[in-house]
Image (cartoon, rainbow, N blue to C red; front, side, top):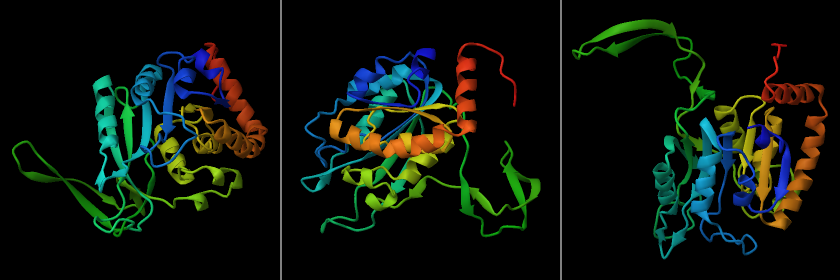
Length: 288
């Protein structure tokens, strides 16, 4: 784990598979990434080798760690490719658990005349064993907010009884359908607008907040425009990224430099990094 954290807050040009081979086994708490969607976009002629990528992800994720795999099928000859589902099944064959499947809604425009809408975007939330942490996002309004509600439970014999009475909170945990703005207008960073397939910043942020703790290292082996890295920093996490396309790496670096300078120079962030280094060395850390 210590070897992996020495790359803390770095964005490297190069292949994500080769980059992950430098990392310790069972060392990364969270991966948030969005691989190429078939051949929908041209990424400078760089091929995508899914199975070697998946094997390295299984090796480097720590027990209880999570991979958030954001994918969408491409339309080929009038039908969805099904590639995202095949990828998910391969992850399960490697040993991952399918902890949650999120449905991500972006554009509602139906581009195809003989089908409903666009292919669904998924985030397959894959874990190595039981997830070590989960911080649910509580932003769905409750229609009965403020009312006293009686909650029942069903017993083994099939009968029901009142379990407890509570006052309904204003908001509840969101479901598995998430909606975001897509395209260049999901970020104010003009440097990122040159990338052909931006992950929504709010999606990356929500995944990071849900399945990591402050100070954790968040990896994106296919960094693109560094959306995961940016949102990790803004969420008080550390980041590590690899991007094989040099043009995209350069624009990601320009984008990330602005936010990194403002965040890493803050005393609170420097203190978190010092505490992280001491923890890796086995030193005592006070609660302050």
